[in-house]
Length: 205
Length: 205
Image (tube, rainbow over all chains, first blue to last red; front, side):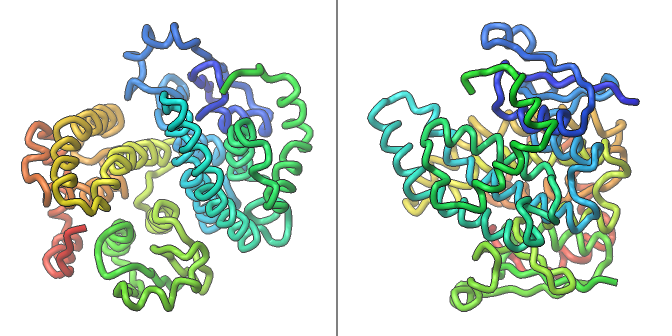
């Protein structure tokens, strides 16, 4: 039985999908969280000077998507065969495409520019990606509420956590996307996830 | 025995990694290339109106990363177990991080600006990504010339492919990275790849 240690900031960010995977699978892991001022002292311990990092029996693995996909495959949340896993990966890549434009809007220091970037992102860019995600959900979802094959996979968990970040800025961003809203509702009511969401630390990001 | 159709533009771009995987694995596929003028009439045949798309026994899969990982797993070029596949994914993600910074340069229309961006990329951006890749190779490569586990995987093929583009712009880009140069040389001399490289159409991207 491998031992797992996940190291990240004290926030959801790029580690939360992995924490959700552990929660759904009912698997134990050490949830190491660094505050911003603690991180510099540990940076050199990480292969690429970045987090999240997953340590599996003492071997460190960087890169949030590689980590999440590994855990999903370990715990049967990645798709039931190679082609189904590919559909899950395609949804994940499309979610990543959606999120790319969001990050600069958060880190922009000039207030006026930040407001403009944010408006453009939510008004023009994000809706295109959300449309694409609904297309894939309808194409691969076998008529159900999950993205692929009528079962929960890490694609649903990743969408859940990234969409939370969007909703935090623009509460109505999913209003024109009822399939995606239903998908998130379906994720939230999975018993292990509902329990996890109730008890997890509330953090700024 | 599945049938494979790969749809893309008549260039290397985001499809070449898939082509290299087919070649390395000695597997047949229909290599469909659309000129830009043809593309608009085929756009709505693709799930996300984008390419590349892989069609497997008639079912379409978008997203170049998902396509390449699927094919690599089909043809045993993805890593021998789940954790090894995760190491391969981590290297792939690190290569992708470098190319994400490169992409705005590729599409910059102002030539003067583009030259400046290229200079800045090679001087200030690329070195840290190359450093990261060497770190991962030392950690995961078992002392050999491939990124993971002393065997060719799609991580090596992807590195080869993106550096083809980078070296085309700056032939000295890898001068301070002996291991990475040797890795490329090792990929180039695989018999089926050597044959393919000799005969494929030349393209800048």
